[in-house]
Length: 398
Image (cartoon, rainbow, N blue to C red; front, side, top):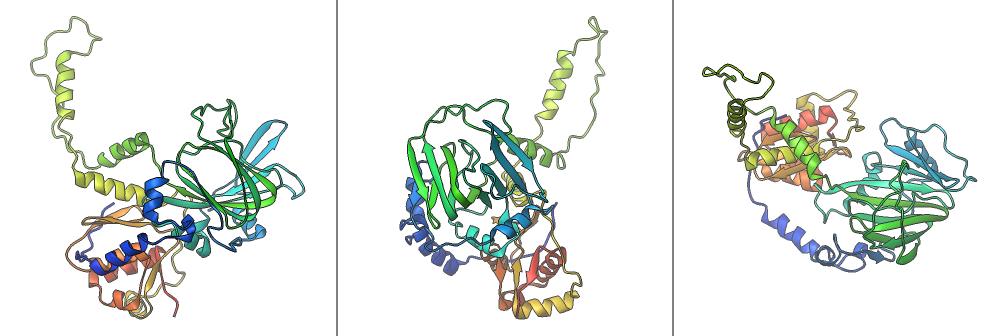
């Protein structure tokens, strides 16, 4: 879906230079190395154990709050249990969970950042990775002995211990064959090479396809910061669907020189050649791919629900309030940009030559102060008001 809002395109060297300087600073979150060093030496390459990545870290949600979230329709949750050498998995929402005395079960709640401001703030600490790749924060609550079995992920992951202890066994093994007939992707021949016990505040980074198995030592909570890694097959299928709206092939198949058919059931070479030539006329540009990718990557997940204000302000009142207090993107909103295109929640619009400073600041910082809103063009202010009414952003508090 395309909307044409007129916006400003201009360079923003001050903010860019400040951001690049921040990326060159060592981060306790990464064990005292810089994001550049982490990406160069570890990202996609090898594990990194970080003791006290967040010193004194405590759970952002207590057990009852997490269980409450797992009971909601708009939250994605799974319950995994291991009994008599067999894995079982149930999908939420859950109105009742196993008693805490029962062992070997795990509750997984995906996308906690979509529901909880502090969880979103934690996820945003990893924005040295682009938003287009940053996926979600999942919380795992496990009873003693709980886990999901030895497995591998197809994406990078940071495993932050939030409460209690978890023993991780990891391996760089190439054998990634799975146990057949299980609801989970459990490795058939897991052979651990390293072992760590993580305490609250400790964090383990694992690259894609790195075998690992985490088991709770007593009751524990682990936060997983995951990254989006769509398959090229998925991207290809989605792109073809996206392009179906813009394909224009005039005319209709015809064969004025048709000859009597000697073999009626055979598709003729002439028909095959003609259709092939017509389909070869389908072309796509870099702009097509840019718009597709921006809309695809900013599309909300299926369970996301946007709640607009019960009594929205009139556009005039909104403009006054936003110009005074500013606005912030909702937790569920994904906003990206590339070149002259800006994307928000699966929609895109072309960028003109006004007010890009405000829009890029909104996308990068996820908020705008009152002065930035007040100085934006009328068209941008109208767009902000529409997004406010749709629940895509909110007015900042006084």
